[in-house]
Image (cartoon, rainbow, N blue to C red):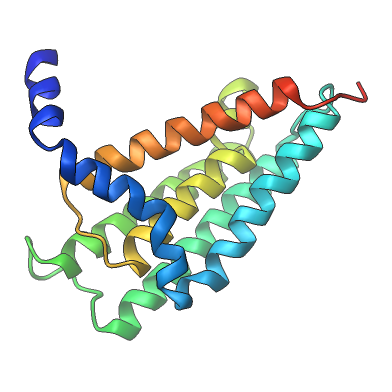
Length: 184
């Protein structure tokens, strides 16, 4: 299993790299997505600096719930975007419109799930505050916005690149939290 995954990644490394670079490049090319990207990026940076500076500060249930609402609003905007492009469709499996609509549906269902779990305090704090953290929510929003607004093909290499992007951004901000001076 691992050999076949490694083989797939190796044989598609060029496309994976191109899609990975798209996560940085597309927001500068497609000006329409800037209005959605800037709030996500600013939120990530400001909140990471905040939590780096105030290391003892903890996320609360209210913050986790609010973060899940942000992802619901992002999903609604992505549905609006697809609808305006005439690409909102669940009737033609295999088409870009179908795949894009399914992607947005997954983001929306994930956000609704997180909202219900956070609002009702159903899952353990650790899970809630990790999955509904500002970083996780805004990185999901960022990658979804870039993929859809950027017209990036919805292929396995795109999703591998998205996972790599997500993990590297988490690592980067983990290092920022460690290195940033703390007030306690």
